Image (cartoon, rainbow, N blue to C red; front, side, top):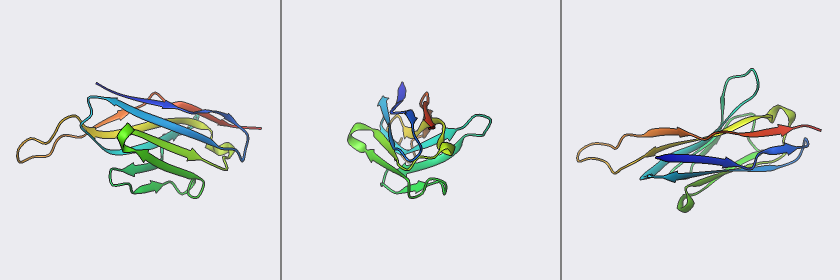
Amino acid sequence: QVQLVESGGGLVQPGGSLKLSCAASGSIFSIKAMSWYRQAPGKERELVAGIISGGSTSYANSVKGRFTLSRDNAKNTTYLQMNRLKPEDTAVYYCNADLTLSGPPPGARAPIFSYWGQGTQVTVSS
């Protein structure tokens, strides 16, 4: 069983900062990628940022230069540092992890499973 637990959301004024954390736990063999998505009321869920096992990161254009994604492999935890927040960043932020539960069988690749956290609310308002 795998769990993703997010923390760090809250209410912040425009221009402020928040740091979200997502900790993965359970019977994890290897985490291939961890990502953050967000969903604002009445809108579709969108990808905010992602990081793969090698450490490469990618960001949505709307958050480039303001958000920084990092990862502590030893703790199976990812951090999303959000600076210069705007009202349009208001959303529920969800953590996602693509991972394997066991090593690869002989001559094949281990299946990759995708898990989601429960979400954490970020509200940017004066």
